[in-house]
Image (cartoon, rainbow, N blue to C red; front, side, top):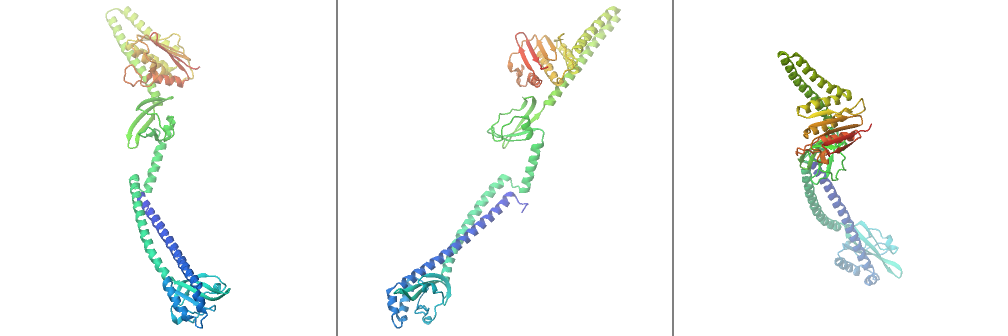
Length: 481
């Protein structure tokens, strides 16, 4: 039975419950019917016995020398009219005056008569000459004393016959109730089978264990949102990454893409399901930081490539001047170019001792030069060894420079200090304060993330950012010392 489906097991158990309930109800009804029929027979016998005992004709017949002559026909007539099985009239000693079997007249009454001799009518079930019967005995009083006794009774066989008739009806009703219960059980089982897909308890328990293990151990956030926008289910990772309401409560819709939530960069994917929408949330904060550092390294590599390209051009020019017999001009040209490059490197390295940020500035300088933009590191820049997140600094400075270059500026000026970062350009300026929101871009494709990440990094460092758009764009980031 353990291998049966849950629906089959529930159907069998419900059938057993229905069968036991119906059988118990039928048995109780049969028992109560027997009690009621017995009480009814006792009541009828008592009424007949009491009525006969109060008859004036009975007292008159008792004065005859042989009372049986008048009492026997009278008793039989009353017996037939009332439907009882016997009426026995006897003297106080229990000697019969009447009996359905005339041969029993004159014999001793079989049964209890003591309560009646004390003047009380009573009923009992006793086995007499006619078999077991429900009988009543009533006293016949004259002058304040008991002068005779009257007993009327109904045989138990007649009570049992009526009970058997009742049993047939009870059986029919029980069968009908059992059929209705079985039909209801089948309907419930069919619905349960559809809902559980015919799986058994062991399989359902295994599915629950697997569901619980996957839901609470996977690192990605998983959410199930109903069609009405209510949160149906979420795992621990989702609650850690998002400020979620309680299950069953409405939640803010989430679209696919990259979202900035607090100080985290989250990638959101959605997929429709039969129960609603499945939302997958992945934390890309560390990946985004590594991407920023990788961009800095790539920019530094690009600067080296550009420098190598320029060095090759300058070397070719020097060699050509030497071949043309102009060594003095060759020396002057090579010395001037080397002095310019070295001055830029010395100025950046001297002002910014954070190696990652220095490499970023040199790389962005070479990249900007290739795009016809002059990148100037302000002479007042000074950044030593401070307790600042290098990744956050790269995110702030790199994205601000990239936005200035992409804005079409001819010159970009960068000032970096321990408590201040300023990037200014002579471009058209920032046209909207919404630039710090995810998705804003001057390209109009809704995929902008740079300035939004700048705002996030500034908040993570506990700083503030100001924007001046009067002449070009000036971004001023103030950091806590």
